Image 1 (cartoon, helix red, strand yellow):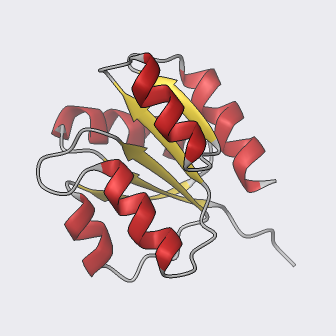
Image 2 (cartoon, one colour):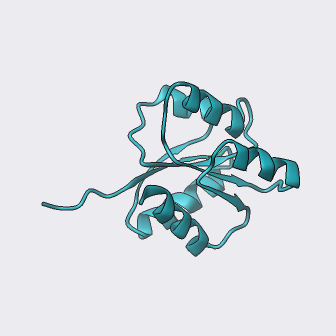
Image 3 (tube, rainbow, N blue to C red):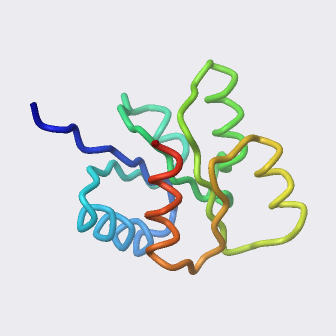
Length: 120
């Protein structure tokens, strides 16, 4: 019986970031779902094993999406990413129970390791 590939959902409002992450993840053997907004992710019937979520999005932000998912009982592991890193943002991400917190730009290996840990 073949092993099912893990699916990573990517939510980022930067189109070039979505394309780059999708290519990296697919090259590493992951299936991907990409979304330009938190609202688009919520509207989809995602079957992701892990959520790679930008914190600063147009519209609903990453923290709010995480709160909504948690409030609905979701146990989907979330890896937050941001280009606007500061202590308060890191503390909030950790307090929400993220699987990892990545500062953009980040090394591809760091992301792959974070996904492996989150989905183990």
